[in-house]
Length: 233
Image (cartoon, rainbow, N blue to C red; front, side, top):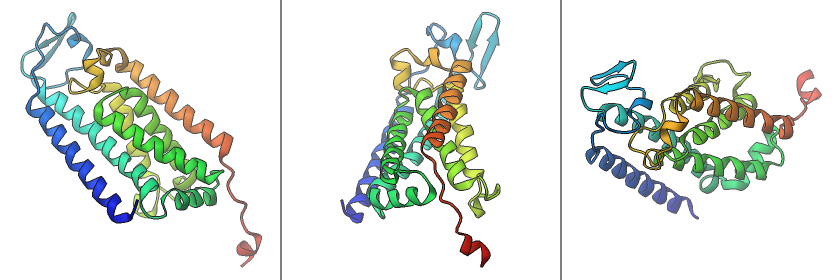
């Protein structure tokens, strides 16, 4: 795929996704008290009142679900583009593989393919709101690896390639796992959203995310040894 074609494809995908998200909000159906999953959803604002028996909705939940949609869609579209860029633009997988190899993630081509596939897969799942907590865990794992291999010794500020960016993405992913995908999601339609949010979502995202990232580093990260000649110079 040429760079021009890759650029056209990602622009079309972005436009279609944004239209689909907008339609989800426009045609959103308000959730009423008789909804079976209302008592499992953390209603934080928009006229919702918490009681000992659960939650009583005074107003509409549209605002809350729209906020969750924006959060996970922004994360999903962002990380999808990162994976797409690794696979189809610039040096593509071969060039990305050489970069991974140079930083110590070996074999580089394998990890480039794994990273690109994970980023695109996680992105799609987050936008759809499907297996949201597992997708958040995948994104956290990516950020753990990125932090350790690229950013950890460069300070905090992103302007100096520090770890500010990856930390923020990881925290946003964790928040998404805790709050769940909201009603505008496939998880909700499949009636599993309420089973995986809250502290369960926190545990899934944190344990699987950090665990998977740490395991990948322990098994495959072999940073190149410093050049003595360069240090003497």
